[in-house]
Image (tube, rainbow, N blue to C red; front, side, top):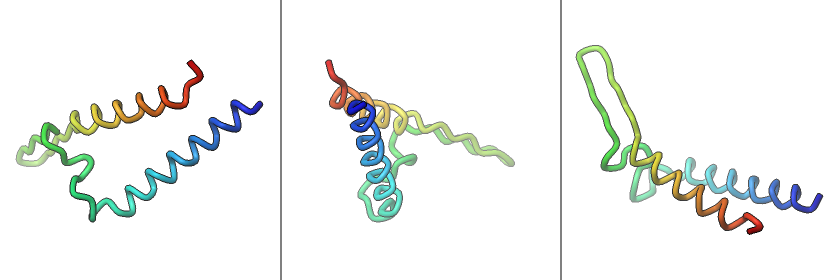
Length: 72
């Protein structure tokens, strides 16, 4: 049962950190979702946005967090 407690604590800390990032988003030197490499295509009446660089960055961060908190 202690493994579940650790997981809940880690999840809460991650959510709190994400909340701080959202609150301070305008003051950060980079803007998540507007990084170089993100694809934005604007037509006359439509806009297509695919944040590929942001997705790769978040994937790497989550990967290292999972590896950090895993038992192996």
